[in-house]
Image (cartoon, rainbow, N blue to C red; front, side, top):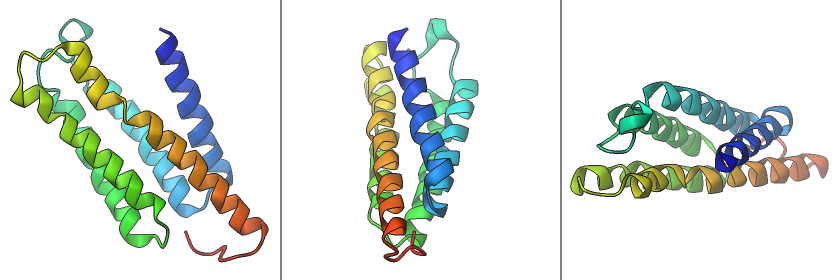
Length: 144
């Protein structure tokens, strides 16, 4: 249960920080993360069979998140949205472990598709911090 508390603390801190202090791109990504997490919780299989087979609902949520992150990356002048999109693409590709190897351990499959959220949230916090620093010195504040 500690990992759940750690994840929610990180999610609340990073997304809250981005919503309050970030630029447009940071706020959009924070909303995508928060919405994606809520939708993933709804779309996930019941606990008794979770990660025992391909998680179609979670895959579709991750696919939608990848599309939205790609749209942010296309519009942005910064590099961090491309990295965010790349991390999400790897997470999306991790779902195929459940298809290609049906005997994969449930823990392994669950870790593969959820582990990428941690570096993505940290990247969002770093991007928000760098946006604040650029804004504070007045350098290219309008660019996301």
